[in-house]
Amino acid sequence: MTAIRIDGNALAAKVRERIAADVVQLKARGITPGLAVVLVGDDPASQVYVRNKAAACAKVGMHSVIHRLAAETSEAELLLCIDALNNDATIHGILVQLPLPKQIAEKRVLEAVAVQKDVDGFHAENVGALMIGEPRFVSCTPAGCMEMLKDIGMSDLRGKHAVVVGRSNIVGKPMAMLLLHANATVTICHSGTKDLAAQCRQADVLVAAVGKPRFITADMVKPGAVVIDVGINRLPESEGGKLVGDVDFAAVSEVAGYLTPVPGGVGPMTITMLLQNTLVAANLAAT
Ligand code: GUN
Image (cartoon, rainbow, N blue to C red):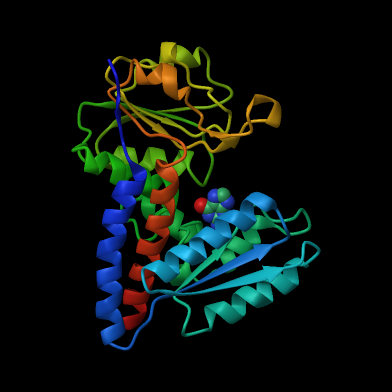
């Protein structure tokens, strides 16, 4: 079997066209959706992500600002910046790029973002809303994965077994919840899981979010399964230095029914969902 490649770039382009059209409508009512991205420190990967997010905003006609703060910024200074953005009427969405430097408590910062501007969906109130099945802002990466499933006709997963490998607050946990709301039977696997391969082989939908290059091998995949690769890992220069996912793409292609590539899979959908959430936030502010 050769898996069908789910093209994240193509799907992202389609969704962004719709978002751009909605932005035009909002602008006609005098509202330009605005996103503020806050970056503390100079982590090279975060610099790239933040630049890409701002560029994506511009392409759909949204306003965006990047607040770059020094690595030694105190928690109090960062909280002041967030407070100003919470009170800025031109800003509808606020994203604080993670990870934060050690001197700053991530939880306090994420809780400081106004719930109605929390386009990352990281505030406890938004996490709770997802948990009880009344999602408002949902973490962008899992939301993007669900759009990909919808696009291949798998929006209802009744009778299907979904396995999520990874239990982070950003991806694993919200992903499992979204799959559950789509009626899948869900298993969450992690570093403490016994016989991970056997668990993964149960999956009709397998989501890999572990952050380990080519961790999911062909023997861990049920023939015909849908495999969603959330990982973005840079190989060492000695191995070519390229970006790879958490899935051994070439080998798993021979077993899976559908597979997302890295790059060009989940990544573009994550940013698209950020734009979508910013649009929702701007609409909320407009009503
Ligand atoms: N760092 C890695 N992924 C993310 C994300 O989705 N949002 C934020 N704010 N930081 C991240």
